[in-house]
Length: 441
Image (cartoon, rainbow, N blue to C red; front, top):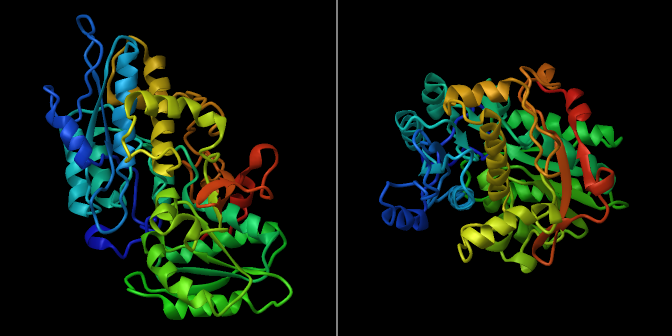
């Protein structure tokens, strides 16, 4: 949305708070073995006296039976190689450490403790669902968390969290707004949990703005091995209105693929149903793994945080990938984790450039972020800035500073910009006002 807690959705671990570590893939292990300076160290320029490397960490799960994000640490390592090949930052080379949290609370805590022991200046562009395990070690060491994946709502509450996207709150509100114009009845399938209880209000906020009735709320056990009954119930609800095509919205995080197995079979008995979901429950890697153009997601509406991978604004990222990670199949430019890591490192670069030749430490990084730094991401997001409390503090998201949402559709197995969608120019809409009116408890 998990390791030994696979019942927890990628987006639905309500106790998550900002933290960072990095996934160490098999390819990264091979790379580490070739480095004389140690695992995660990317060779770079040779600085003068006092030009010590700037050490950061990126973590994500890999080789698990739940969510895996190997492209995030792989992108971080490629970015560091590129930075170092072009002279470093203010004479400092960038050193990236990686860690695999294994989708496990113990693994997440180990990654955070290692970040503190290694005295990293920040955890950057990372993914973990176990904020209750890694946040305390990071906070105790004063290490900021820049650009986490937006896995849970708690990334938008921690004072040392610096998110670059709007997480699930923005995605669900945006999806509701998009489906309001195209769907008859909307059926939401979500976990029967405390965290899952937050989801209907977010989806309904967008539906309401589009003058649409609230979604039908269908609960599902997080640890189910099949969802035949829930799929059938959702399809029956979505097809009640024979005059307008209904929509089904699965929001089950890493259990969405299990639901889709049941949904694909049940769907044969119903005609005229569209699928809608959000990044995190589905991304390009999931679409590829489930058959691409012949899979169940073909034609589905999916809300995302950023422009589609075909957009020219991603060209700088693709250039780095081509130069420093050509042939590395862990790095898919269409993957939201890879994209988030790119944006997070864009923020880090801006911070380090602002610090200049001053002290490079977690304290100086945090002070720079807190002092009103404004970061341009080349149009991939609005200009990013993290005030003490943002506009959405009143509804429980004080650190949510980017509520932009794009609408994409799966066409020929690839996520592309929807021709008819939400938002104005560029197909982007800011969901801040919608979320301000959400009935979030």
